[in-house]
Length: 78
Image (tube, rainbow, N blue to C red; front, side, top):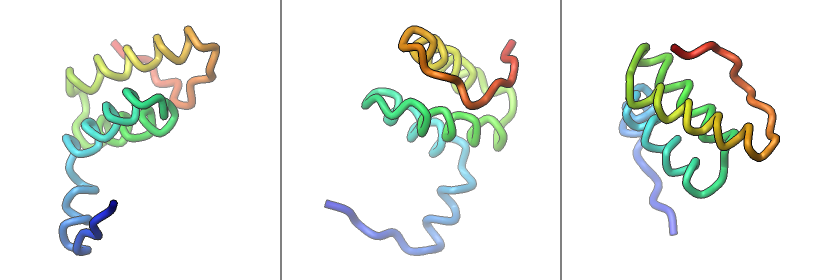
């Protein structure tokens, strides 16, 4: 079941780092790891140095490494 969002709402959500971070977290939980990584990095681009996003990326990369999956984004996180 999907509900189409008006373009104005969609455009606002696409520019909101929290939306991308939350979507990344949900994708991470359901195992869509590369999609999660993309959304986490979009959130980080929109809100650099966000601690919650950085922590989620580190957790995601740990899972990806454990599964032997390549990491698309190779940015060093400190």
